[in-house]
Image (cartoon, rainbow over all chains, first blue to last red; front, side, top):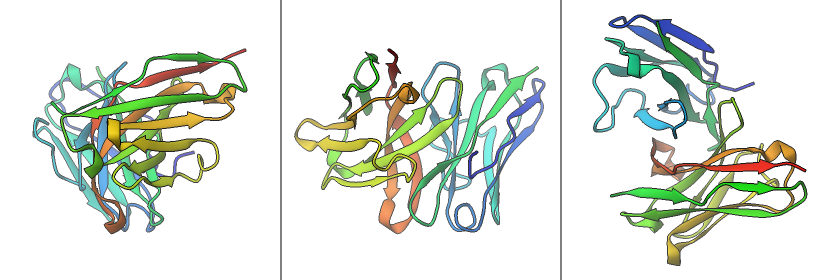
Length: 109
Length: 124
């Protein structure tokens, strides 16, 4: 059971906008920044969003992140077939312990 | 090119010891923390711990404290993850990744470069 809670699955059709939530507490998301990772099948994770809403170089602006209180969200607009992957939120807790969400499997219908 | 290259797949028996490696190149290895992440078959990512190769400052997740040892040899730009006595439940993919940020200041820009992963299979 992960401390950061994500829905196990999400889906959308090409071109749609989907959001994935990540719920935590005051000792993790509430007091620290959130990062998001994308893991395509059979590959290593890739940093998608850092510091709640910043995109690393090369990440399309279709991907955006936000945080409010003890929750965070990843939004993907203009959904594409290649976005089908597992998505993980991550944050520190106040003891500098790294936390990952349980992951959300995104299916593009 | 900045990259982390991990050692190859391992097949071990319960009770055996193991040390896997993660070699950095293309950047100042001693200036960035290196984290280790476990992914059990069909499961999600789990944070194991992190090391700063510059001074070997190491932090462990409570779940992995005492179960594994993280170390680094800065002279050869390599971080390690080791077990003294493997269990079947250690069967997983293990990733190393470079951490961006200032750990002690709670500045966390995420893990931007990942190794390709090392598969560890423990079976009698």
